[in-house]
Image 1 (tube, rainbow over the protein chains, first blue to last red):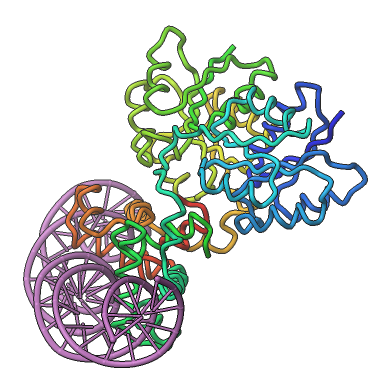
Image 2 (cartoon, rainbow over the protein chains, first blue to last red; image 1 turned 180 degrees about the vertical axis):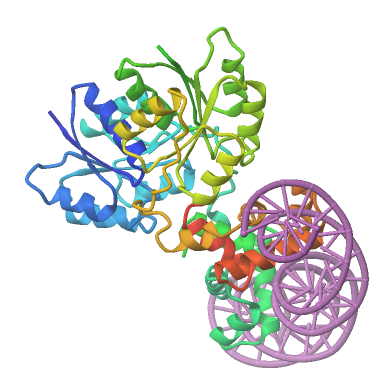
Length: 205
Length: 205
DNA sequence: TAGCCGCCTATACTTTCGTATAGATGCACC
DNA sequence: GGTGCATCTATACGAAAGTATAGGCGGCTA
């Protein structure tokens, strides 16, 4: 019977999912409440076949946690689970070596199928979750940013003012304004807060 | 056997919780994926004893959805469920007439007890949810935000301007500025971008 | 009853942000 | 050489954002 490890910081969500999986009597289920605990379990006596990682969980740091887990236990399969079904995150997780992406908008029965699918050696990425409220404007927008604009965006993502950014980059405040204006236009947003939020959402910084 | 209605927009979470409750064979469980659907079920042929509402769900609008449900079906008990165990929200929900507050950091077994407790006519508010990973430090800061400030912060997290926020909340722009200024001070940040970033980091919105 | 608090509004002000225009440099490519 | 692009700078202006102060209203509580 395959060993599955569910890692989610919400006890209720984690326990009920675990209970549901266990009720199928097709898996042995382990749980963890953060990334560190998950890695501990992985290092334990039972070989984990599939690790299901919640995307929003202490220690995850975006997709960094996924990479860590993947690196430490290359034999185990790793799937990402997330409440916000973001196409971009799913895509990035795929290139990070994830074996699957499980949106929480999935029906419970479908999840079981997805898990079986992944354990059987396939990769599961349901790219049809267009139901949720994410606009499809690609990460391509970020590619059009110039070097300086990207740096400026980085500073923006710490919530700095134009003056502070200017100091950090060693340029004049006016120039920062120019970069900000241009990057706002390229990203299709109207102010710095939206730009920072968007960049964070796409895990650029 | 009591009828319970679970309303959560995440299929996976909702279905597994429902399945878990049903496995106890002590309840009949209904589900809904948003507030509107929940109200439809409430208006249906089966009298719902307890409605469990997810705080972050389409149609909820903060605690407004709770009040709507409570008003339309005063005989049914209503409990709020939330992933971000915010003491302030729990408190507010209590004064809004909620019969209970179920943080998702609760263990599955405890949830069953809580539900039984509520159905028996008691009110369940576990004000001890300091164990969870969430707001160990920042919880204090966020907990000190008033209802309006929290709403304002929510709008901030979409990158809206003061003017837009004012329109959305039905108040004057000056008032929004006041709320923004106060919440910035409470969170210990210097501008709206930092506030939005911080809130996002803590998964409040 | 008086006082506190959350909430709303108003006026007035400074600072920051974002836009518009224009000119300068350096680099790469044809 | 000429063209295009990224970069930097400057001046200037309107629009937001943020601060400060003062007052009104309703609910709660000592």
